[in-house]
Structure formats: C-alpha cells, structure tokens
Image (cartoon, rainbow, N blue to C red):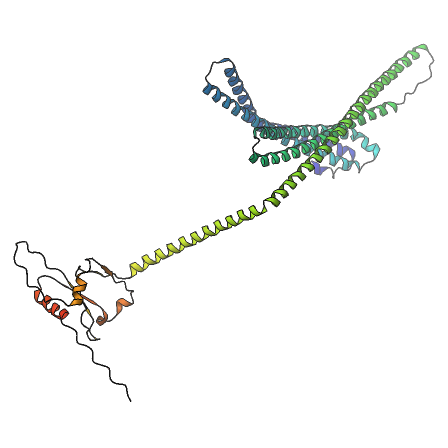
Length: 467
C-alpha cells in the first residue's frame, strides 16, 4: 500500500490510498495481536500455576503442623515456584516489547510517508489530510510510550535480579571480584534505565504537543468563522437573530473549554519538563559514579598486576612447564607405541629357533676347517635306573677347563635366533646344525666325548716374513 502513494497525483486519490492504508494497518494489528496472544498464553498459564502452587505452599506452612524436614522441603518448593513465576513474567515482558516494536515500526513508516506526501501539495489542499496526520502522530506517540514502558519494566526486572545476586553473595575475599563486576553491571543497567525514562518523557511531551496543536487548530477554526446578519424589518426576524446569537455564545463557551484544556496540557507539559530535568541530573550523577567506579577498578587491576607480576610470571612458567611435560610424555607414548608396533611386525617376519641346554656345560669343540660349519652338540643326562642296576661306564675324566665349567649352577637357557628374511636365504653351508644325542646312541656319545676330550691340534705357524 505504501508504494501506491507515488502514483496518486490528486488529493482525492491520495485520500483513497490513506483509507486502504488504515484498513491494512488494522488488519496488521489484528493479526499481530492474535499471534502474540498465542505466544503469551503458555507463559501466562505458567505464571498463574506457579502463583497458585506458591500460595498453597505458603498456606500449608502457615496453618499445618509440619516437621523441620517437611518445612525445609516446602520452602525449597516455594522458592522454585517463585523463580518459575519470575521467569514467566520476564518472558511475557520480552514478548510484549517485541509486539509494540512491530506496531511502532509500521506507524513510523506511515508517518514518514505522509510527511513526504505533504511536500507535494499546497497548504490549502493538504488541510483535508491534516486531521489524519495529527491522529497518526497521536497513535505513534502512544505506541512508542507503550514500547518504552515495556522496556522499562524489563530493565527494572534485570536490575532487581542483579541486586538479589549481590545480596546472596557473602563478604568473602573470593567474592569481591564478582561483586565488583555485578556493581558495574548494575550501574550500566541503571544508566540504560535512565535513558529509557528520558525517552519516555520525551514522547509524553510529544503526545502533549500533538494534543495542543489539535486544540489550537480547532480554536483557530472557530475564530475564523464569519457570521453575517441581515437588516431586520419585523420583530420575528429579531427572534431568529437571537437564536443565531445564542449559537455564537455557544461557540464562545466551546472556545473557553478548549482554552481551559490548553492550560491543562501546558501544565502537564511543564511537569514533564521538570521530571526530565530531574532525571537528567540523576543520570549525570550516575554516570559520574560509574566513571569513578571504573577508574577504581582499573587502578586496582593495575595495582594487582604491579604487585603480583612476579607471581604471575612464575605461574606462567609453571603452566608452560606443565604443557611441555605433557607434550613430552605424549610424544614418548607415541614413540613407544610405534616401537611396539615395529617389534610385533619384526617378530612376525623373522623365524625363531629355540635351543634347550642342560645344566651340564659343554666344552669348546675343536676348530674345524672353514668350509665345514661348527656343530652344536647337546648331551642329555642318562636317566636314573629304577631297578637299582649298576651305573653305566663313565666317560674319561674331563679336562680342568671342563671341570670348572661343571661347578657352575644349573640353568636352562633359551636361545632365540632371530634372523631377517635375507639371512634365511643363505647357502646350506652357512646354516648351523643342532644335533641332539639321546641315551640310546651310546656309541655316538662315546665318540663325541672322545672328540671333546682330545685336545685340538695347534695351527701351523705363519710363514716367516720376506727378507
């Protein structure tokens, strides 16, 4: 509808557009009211329910004979329902603020468009649309007042919540910083509240100004009325003149009433201006206190940093050391995990040979030629005779080196031969051979013992160096 104003060239067409615009605004207000009533209903129900439960609990605490535990539980429930009711009230106030914000936005757009239309027409032509402009200003001022009053209620609720938090905190040293922050928030909320109240008084004054302008226009219209009287030729015409004079006197009495209303509105305007001046002074005092409080907080912060800078540095160093140790332990754990995975993979890829050695030490085998690999000979002890028969013939006496080895403690050694895959592919001559001799092979045992007992022949001397 607002886009149709440019196409209206005459005042008659513009008045039709204004009628359509008023109807559209009424439809908007109706739909917005239904929508916001739908949003408000759950919170209203919660507020009523919480208030009802709270009253029932207080009545029970007052008239019933209850034990201390039951009384404490009921008091706790009453506090909980009180918090729910306060939360519902805050939600209702927020939704109300949003509703009036939308209506004020629509009225402001209509008022702005009408001021633009006034520039396209002359003063005489625009006189027919002047009552609508005054009515629109009046509606805009009223909706703005409703919006600002809703905001004022929200800010007062917020200020009350901050006061309760400050009262609940004790006087311990650890709560001093929290109290300082809450105090700063309280000053900021109070300043915002003063700004809203000043805006509220400003729009109240605008509303009074609109009413004064309307009354002054009506007085001027009545003063501009001209009454023409004809000459009288008979007494009956005088009666008609008296009737017209009575109507003139009635107009004068109406003007008197309008002037009285003007005086009343001027008085109200003076009261509003005085309240604005008082609030402005209070706001200045609050701003000075707020600046002083911020300055004190800044000085205390600087003093704290100055006196505790060394401790802060130490704390930072400790934190850095902790972070470094944590990083080192984390990297060490990652390295150990990688080594574990590597060992498991190498264990799976390599072959393992286990050799079981008895407690009897074995002498060194004689040196063999390079082409023949050295054999590992492992002898198992003969089993004890269960029938008490004579023992078998003993081998010849061992050499002193073997006797010294026999005196060592008995042990079982597991030898794991881990070789990579590349070593497993050597020639057959390089692979060691393990020979296990049992008790039944006595001839081979004697032959091996003779080989071990016989001293190995010394190697030939090296050739003499050339002259």
